[in-house]
Image (tube, rainbow, N blue to C red; front, side):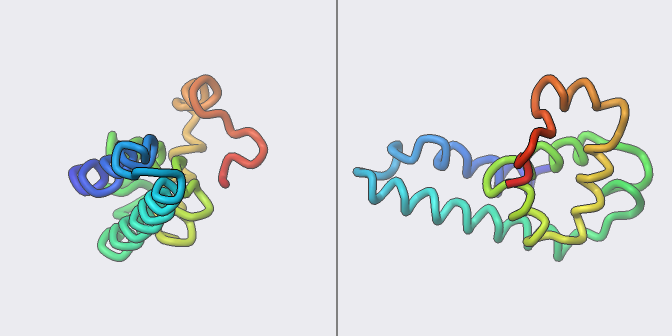
Length: 118
């Protein structure tokens, strides 16, 4: 949880409003490019260090960690980037996506519409 929060989530403070740190449009583009690359790198690091213990990260029971991973993996660089960076974690987020207990959440907050994976 702390790795995702500290290394990935925190980058969205910069990425969502790059003008906080960049003086102009060119700088903002650079900030977006670099934060996207860093986020992908963080997913690679996590994918290399985490070996899911079952259907989900910690075993066969869904945890808050799985939910957190699934949600953030949908943000930029989106799921295609996530799958490329951390292929061993792809089955986990797909299992979270498919969990029937979350169907209403996904439909209301993050629908699986065409192109959602990036």
